[in-house]
Image 1 (cartoon, rainbow, N blue to C red):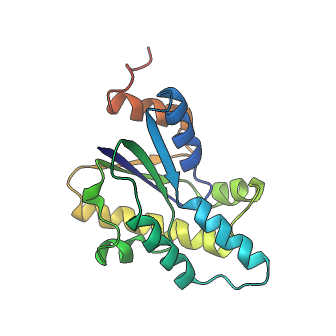
Image 2: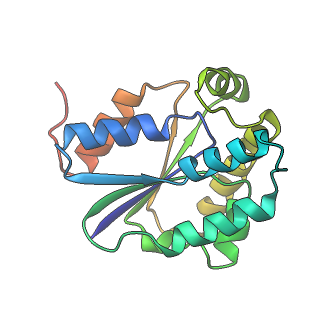
Length: 175
């Protein structure tokens, strides 16, 4: 079993990279995304149901408990407080062969978010961006070398995908 955890705020490029890996491996690497759950929660908010951190936390707990146990997977995950999930034992980085943290400047994220079909609220986007920076610092202290970071505003999703495929021995490096 190979599980890669892609962490990062909404609009950072997690889904783009997961889809590129899926295509490049002819479906040998599957993916599931917590972002789609967050988008559904945001749709509820727009229907006059207030968005709450507890609602997102409950959805995150359920999502993480039902992760696949066989095959090769990329798990996309966005949250407003990764450190609380890690410290609470709900998210365990040792269950993943690798954790990839994707970052981008907040103005880049905001611009990408507003172009999405279902944008998340700006306040939640900022909160997730801050949480990503915080979890990166946390993982640098506790991780055992299975954490990588890529800035998607400095490196294209295609270049990041190629690096990941090479690292996982799924493709020879491009010449």
